[in-house]
Length: 173
Picture 1 (tube, rainbow, N blue to C red):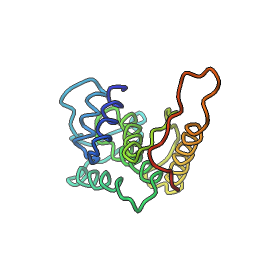
Picture 2 (picture 1 turned 30 degrees about the vertical axis):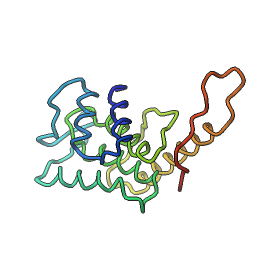
Picture 3 (picture 1 turned 45 degrees about the vertical axis):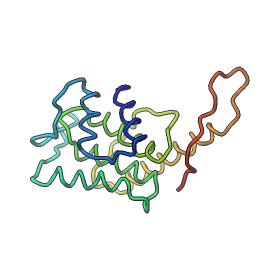
């Protein structure tokens, strides 16, 4: 997972657009296997209780959603949350989609010069058509961005060997 995070940060530093090809490279690192491909059939999660159908246009729809994560008219937290949910709900790979969703969220933020200093699993029960849940996730991402910014701008504590981390761009709503 750390190798995939490092790769995603490198890709963001080069300004690479978010594409299925980029995610495939990260997924190979996440899973530790070569030859990872976009799923070729329906996907199932939560012990088979959730089904993600595959149609002739699923991959193209997913690519379009990934491109939308770069739309500067949409607030950063909302774009990052949307990209996370797109990976979670399109379920592009047979395995490791939750980990990839977190990498995707971090990538969208990193591309804009924001690196969260504390991250962990986001565990919640939501459905793909749950607008309130998506808004809640965007609000949570904004809280994480602001908290990171506040910690980064505080003076280091006495005896701390860690210098403060500065964000390269101001945060927005």
